[in-house]
Image (cartoon, rainbow, N blue to C red):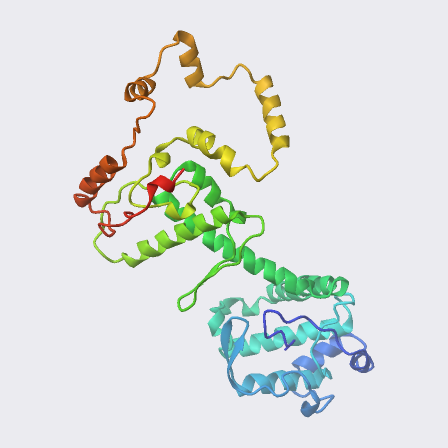
Length: 382
């Protein structure tokens, strides 16, 4: 009735001339109710002069996100009732109090037509409960909330700032897309037992862009201005692994190895079948190794100063490794092994590591290709 067919549709106010024409015909709410409910009441205006639903043809119509089957009876009934009330275009006066005669006429006509067409099956797609059609108090409260709160709020905001409602809709869509991506990626990460430091990243909704996947065109990526290229590449790798997991759904369930991942200098090398030694490092050692290079393009002097102040105020809390080494001056088993290897020795021999991994992966079925992850140049990793 209001013409709010599309999600982006905005509420409109009645024409002042038509509003005055209505006011000249009624003096009280009782007269409006009598005109609406009496079968003997005459049309105050010809039905052809009713602008509401003018040009609407019976058939299947898309209203918002739903498909409505509009029957000819619905159109004729609404126009007949508005003709009795002398309303040429149904549009509540949002800039007036809720209990004016004109707003009362809009409320009465809306509820009466809703009940009539609902009984005839017009709103079956909504799966409404017909038992509440006789609860007039509930229907009035629902009407007042939608018209005189939600739509009035939109109208007031649009009056102050043109295009504000459209911006709100876009922000809502972006938020929903990010929420959907966050749920998908986070659940996948939990299922794969990924490190907690990356669960924290994936748990933050603002870390995800409002990406949409299209089968024919691939990913449509809306890059976040505050997210680094490395983080964006990492998110793509997560999406690739999710897609691979979906491809094997429906097949026999197989036991997967635990996969560890990290923001390595080349994020494309994340989540590969062959684990690089750097991925075996704990959070602290991994950060110590890559912090300087990863932050060299940023000015973090203020953060370093704050950290120094924190360290001075918390000098009682020392690193366990430093305590153990300073107590007796002895080397740990790992340090001893490194000393025996010599300064020029490489504890991660590439040929031995690849040979061991090849032997291991040929005997383990992890639901991927046997060559998954091989062929990458580990020497360029840092």
